[in-house]
Image 1 (cartoon, one colour):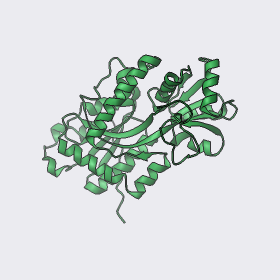
Image 2 (spheres, helix red, strand yellow):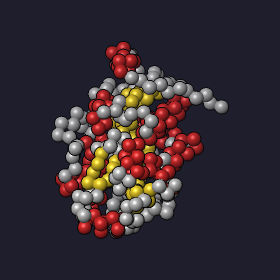
Image 3 (cartoon, one colour):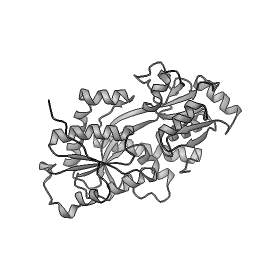
Image 4 (cartoon, helix red, strand yellow):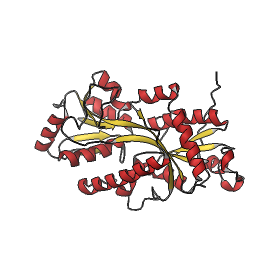
Length: 328
């Protein structure tokens, strides 16, 4: 059995010194990698992004015989970690665990500390996870039709909780307001856990968030599922209809988990990382982990992900103008 290599969490000054480009000799792209690689995760440890990054990092370590270190850099709506990678040496040894927040940033922040197109070489989109809209059992709504009707009668009176600003749940709520012509009120929390606690207790009637967190509570009957936000139903909750099926035609958004490198990273390295991750996500031990989180696989090319990122930036820019979406 292949030995599991421990993935360390790199923090503070150790991370800076470990990966200082001045201390490392340059090498040809054909021999990449010849030393440790850092994956910067702009979220706190323990969430789905962190778990998936560690899972992929472990497999990269085994494949390349070089340690892959997960560096959690939460803060500023993912801007702290994202800026760190944007300014890093473009040699493939510092990567960003990227996602939807990187494409909505230009619409939310006037002084975004990086440009999502100019400052990154996009590598691959590993997986997408639908947002699940769920309601407390006492809330008098069982489907999207009823939610829209009630929201139109009570504008601004119905609140929905999310894991925070610029999360997939927040963005899905803003898009829902725009496309359904309603005004739900966003209540951002510091993570999915606190938002779910208030949703389960009835302190807040609705929860919008990546499927992994509320899924178990829907299955247990503690929350009622209203809809998923992708165009196709989820394999883990196949009985829950999409918003598109329920009349909000064309509604589609999901949280996604991709990888980016600093702009200027050699194309050969970008391609090598993309190909290896595409292989890894098909491994049974990885695919089981993804499926348990409600994810479905993507594994696209750098060119495909770059095009997707540009589409997402345009999409959320439009939604921000129409809905007043902002970093509250």
